[in-house]
Structure formats: structure tokens, C-alpha cells
Image (cartoon, rainbow, N blue to C red):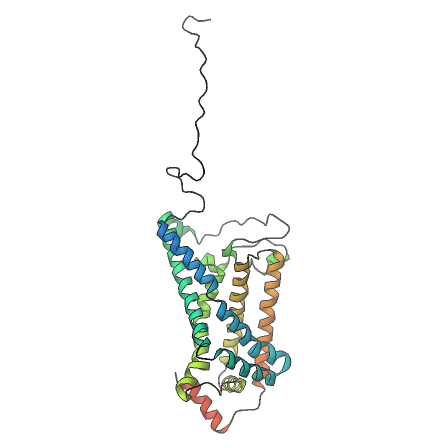
Length: 303
């Protein structure tokens, strides 16, 4: 043994203790935390709550309205649809309920827009401009890890029609091109569509006659007969609205399995098909003439 080596006495090993998970480690963000302040986190939580549950009154109205103008005219004829419209008018076109329905939409849209803006700002602050520039690049997507084909990424929407057949779900076009989820994108598209519908069907009759009691499927028939744009407009409105409501319901209830998405596609395309049949039946109604045709013309042209 070389002479420069020395024997040392053994010393006990001191194990370095790591801080508990609840304690903040310098330089490391706790899991699930926002990069913003606690105030920002509270604002995001509040906006998320408002966005999720404020839409419930409008969702109830939409079910009644879709039944009267899409489902019943398609399956049972326009007379059944007009009767349902009269019943629905008594339910939601009142001084107490109509402001609640309108406020429901405003709260849902405003909270959703603010929430997306706030999240974008936090993401930009956290990752910088480089992350935003690389967002649009297509990345490989892993196949579902289980037989249910669960899709938990909101940016994949319903995963694409082929995903329900067992193919891998992919990032949606809206996310790759615009950086927003299909649910948010459909909501933004729905805003001008709904605004145009409400303007012609509710606001203009109120401004012309003081109420909208004359608005029924005969008014829709007159509008369809006077413009070729009306038919595709309402088909598109039903499709976008159905996608937004069904996809949003799945997200709210946490339904992401392949079976849930298959049911969602069935509901969406069933409503789309019924809307086409309903519009064809409405278009075949007897033509509106005389004073009623003049009134409907003022409704359409007022604004």
C-alpha cells in the first residue's frame, strides 16, 4: 500500500431532506399553478365558473326553441311547430324571463372572451413570443392509451370524425391555424350568427310593431322565398350551434370517451339533417300575401 494513503474513521451519512410538496421550491412552479399572481388565479377561477354555469338559462331556452323550429316541423309538420312556438313565446318572451335569457348569453360570451384573453396573456408572459410562433407547427400526436379512445385535450375538440372509428385524434385545424380550441372557435362564429337571427326575428318586429306576436314559421317561409341566403344561413347556424352546445356539454360533464364522442356526433348531425328537412317543409308552406307580406317585408328590411 502506498505511504500517502491514510485510514479515515467512518462518519454517519446525513440524508438531505427535501421540502414537502406543499412547500414552494425556489425556481420551480408547483404543479397546476398559474404563472400569474394569486389574484389572477382567483379571477380565472371566477370567470371559469361564470362561463360554465351562466349559460344554463339559455341552454333551456335553446332546447325549447330547437324543438319548435327544427325537430317538430321536420317530424310532425309546420302546424306542430307553430303551436310549439306559441307555447314557447308564453314561456320565455316575458318581462321576467327574457332578460334572464339575454343576460345568460352576455355573461357566457363576456366571461369566455375575457378568460381566453387572460390565459393568452399568461401563456405569453410565461413562454414568450417563441412559444407563440411555434404553436402553429404540427406536432406528432400520441394514440389513445386505452381502448376507450379517451380525448382529454380540449384543443382536439371531439377528436375528429375518424377518431370514433379507432384512429388517433389530432389537434384541430382551429388550434393549428388560430390557436383556439374548436369549442371556443365555434362560439366566436356563433356570435354574429345568433345576432343576425335575433335582429330579424325579435328586434326588428319589436321596432316595427311593438311586439313579435306575428313571427312564426310563415315569417320564416316568407324569408326563405325572398332570399337564397336564408336557407344555408340557418343550416349553418344549426350546425355551429349544435356543435357548440353538444361539445360544451361533453366538456362540462367530463365526457371524453370514444362512446361519448360518437353520441355527440350522432346528435350534431341528426340536428343538422332535421334542420334541412324542417326548412324544406317550411318553404313549402302556402305563400304569404297582402298585408302580412308587407309586414314581413318591413321586418326584414328595417335594419
